[in-house]
Image 1 (cartoon, helix red, strand yellow):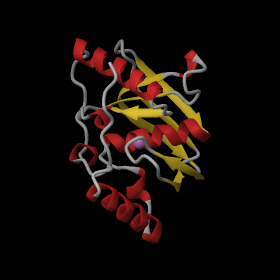
Image 2 (cartoon, rainbow, N blue to C red):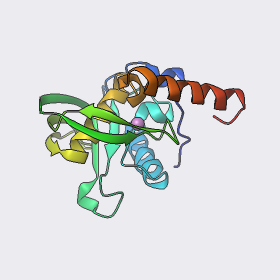
Image 3 (spheres, helix red, strand yellow):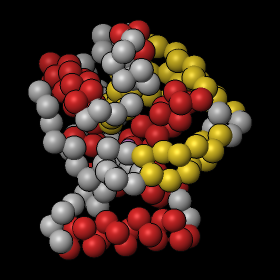
Image 4 (cartoon, rainbow, N blue to C red):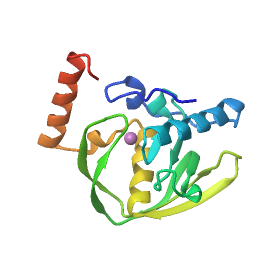
Length: 169
Ligand code: NI
């Protein structure tokens, strides 16, 4: 089912999400909804808090649905290793219309459960590493805007407030 994506300013996006304790039918539905909503947006990744569910689950597909093998759904992900640094333009479905250059590790190795409860270890560089860190941040209540400093951050915050006042956010 397509779920509404909540936006920057909503309290669920600013809270640390809780670990999944049991792979219930609700969790399976959550994963399905995340995948469907991510592809419809379209986006490269989507975390459960972005649809208002405070659980440690996210989905990523850096191929935007073109390569079925590129779809990742991770539950209770944890970083094992990270290395290096990359600076690239980044956006977020919860902050529509805004992008900024964000520093992220160049490489990440991560582990988590897939939707069947099997432990997966995943390595990524480039866009995949960026997406993994971006979605992990969501699970810790952090958006890319929170990683910005100074004028760039102030500008986004100010514009979002203005949109919100106008009822357009
Ligand atoms: Ni995001």
